[in-house]
Length: 263
Image (cartoon, rainbow, N blue to C red; front, side, top):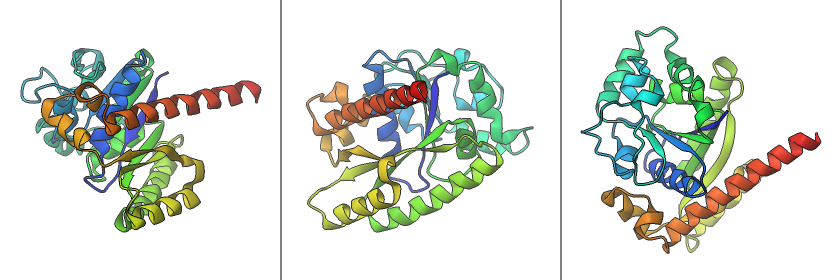
């Protein structure tokens, strides 16, 4: 079964969508089969994948509310070389409609069960709040990738998110764990960045990715061209960082498989 990873942080503006799109494109470039599910009504991951969110046949709304099979809702042509379940303003209505649905917390998990085997990785781009859409993502996921800026308030937000993950794991998804913590928009010249980075490594150890995503103009520009950074400017530091992150993830996965074989 493909690995399902929710990309989540209750704090906005930390690079969730940037991470989702660029990591997905980097892994797709290694010939892995990747699915991105955009659960944010803003539809930024959809637009950043070169797909017009106002002109799609189906969105995450159709999957969650009308139970449209993922195979029928997926957009197969994206600028990043991965498959996509799109989002637009309709997904806001999905959150409201979910309140009246049976097994509302696990709708996405049910829809993914039949389809996850067709992919190596499924990335879910979560909205920046703990709403029913995010709960669906965390219910469906095997793990959570947490992008965060190295600043004081981000540390407080991470503590709250870890608490939320553990509570959800106890109630609806006992397998849920933190996949990794990714430092984004990193400026090594900033003393606070270094201090927070040290705190992260002290508390979360190997869960903190060695790869760091720098502040990078090209990363910020790429979405306006509807393409991941590696296809906008492959020589940029941002594009190289996400390629490095993809490599680190694959190595971690290989190490886990090796350990399981020898266990």
